[in-house]
Image (cartoon, rainbow, N blue to C red; front, top):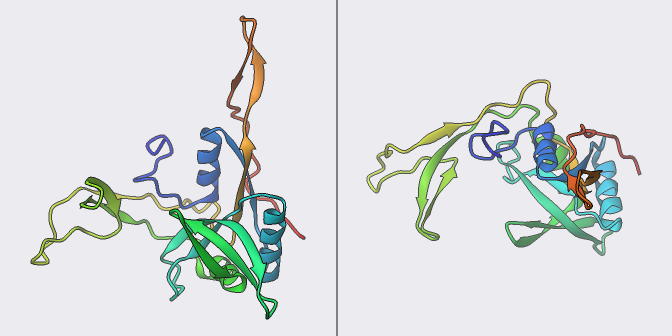
Length: 202
């Protein structure tokens, strides 16, 4: 799928590409674009209350320079004694407690509309005895950079939608029945276009 979608190592810079990956994998998805922090938090609460698992995008670095865009899934929320909303987020099999206002500000204001194209370097991961693509070069003990394969990602097109401030939900499988010459009906994945972004106000 990476080659089919024009990705260097599987990176995703636009909402259109992410939703296209979902569609190709056979799933429907919806995207939301809250206008401000309160709307962002209310949208997440509404989606979680509706038994959805919203995907959020935020700057992983506390410096909030927009260079470390990551995605994670919101699985729950609670209000602390001060009345602040916190979200329980999962990423790479671990769970994290995020302050709702900090998450909203990171997504809405810290992430960039146009990310610079990243260059990935193939390195050896001794912990799982396999190679993987990383954003930093592999170095020898002396600090010399070793000659290793590199791949540079294509930047997001100006016409595409950035992940900044967006919330995405995978809503279910795309299954459309059709009847062939056999007695049994079969299914196939629909190629119909999906709505990319729609406003969601609570």
